[in-house]
Length: 327
Image (cartoon, rainbow, N blue to C red; front, top):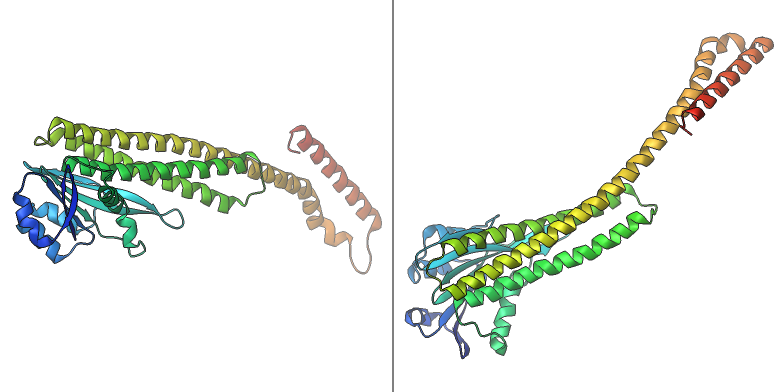
């Protein structure tokens, strides 16, 4: 766990033993970052800060959707950041936040074993580096959480932009009518769709969480509520852009599927023509063939008559299918 004391003049790292003293001060605010949950972290948050057991349980366990719990002196918010995995899978990197008048506590939720811890810490580490460099001087815990969550929203926007580039390349391949292997190409299209849909879902759900936090958080001053409103606007923008890109991708996918289905329909019609042309030949040969062509004595006259009949019937069927426009 990393403890920092932040004022308008700067930031300094602190020992955990100072947390009770810092908790009583009002000339700044503390930021406690908990990379992984532990019994010690739970005791600290319960005894020093007195957080509700439901909020502590939500920090301990994995949350598959964002959450918001509003209390008289603080608000508890759960959000997710995306991490693109393999095969179109998107990992949910959970970030839990306790935001009070003089404290911000960030807890990084349980991770999939396939995701290294540094990916989960990327957003908070970025903000910590800006604090150390002096380029970020938050005046309140809400300003600090604004910086962290804005980094998450920017990450989502960057991923959408990258997926838009991939979708553009896929659209070029579709319009060029290249010889694509349908199953593999459709897998690429639907993998991109799944990634976009997941990011859009994260952004839309995050926006709803902040909408409710703005409505119910009564202890925050107007300038801090304005920061939450801006976060809501960022999430709504990402969700809207993601939805527009999803609509475009679905149009590309439907165009490709329609063209592939048309090719299959034409192929089926041609197979039907072949079957129709060969059907009378098959029928006649199966009925009388063995009685005409025999090892001891072949009936040549009858055989020739049958062959002529087969050719005439095939010609009539070919002409009829041509008039129908089947070939």
